[in-house]
Length: 125
Image 1 (cartoon, rainbow, N blue to C red):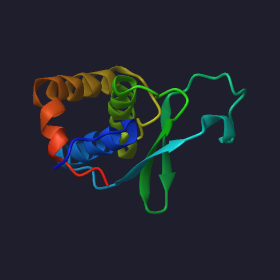
Image 2 (image 1 turned 180 degrees about the vertical axis):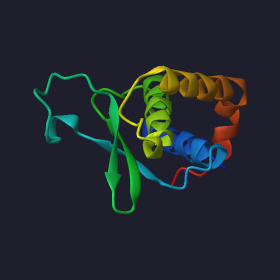
Image 3 (image 1 turned 90 degrees about the vertical axis):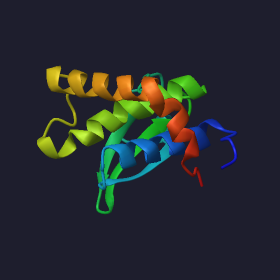
Image 4 (image 1 turned 30 degrees about the vertical axis):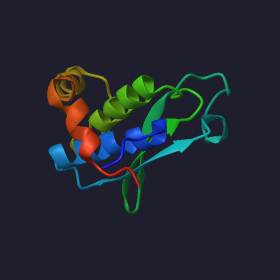
């Protein structure tokens, strides 16, 4: 597998790796959007890096192209939003409570231990 060359390609690899690792079939895709055009934002200056949206086909992680410019920020935001998606069906998908942070810590630890390199084997197309 050739190395991901863009931030978007790397994010797709990470999302596919996490989806496989945690068997989250409801995660449909990850997309980069111009967050200034999304409904419900109070101003274009809001710094919301990402969010999860529910669609008929499944959950979508949306990342703000303006905020997630670097690979490191985009990957961390993907992991953050993936945690929300993982807790979605428990009714905890919007919250940052203790359950969220315990799950997030588990995912970050696994990603730091071996996920960074393991995720590079996933397709990004």
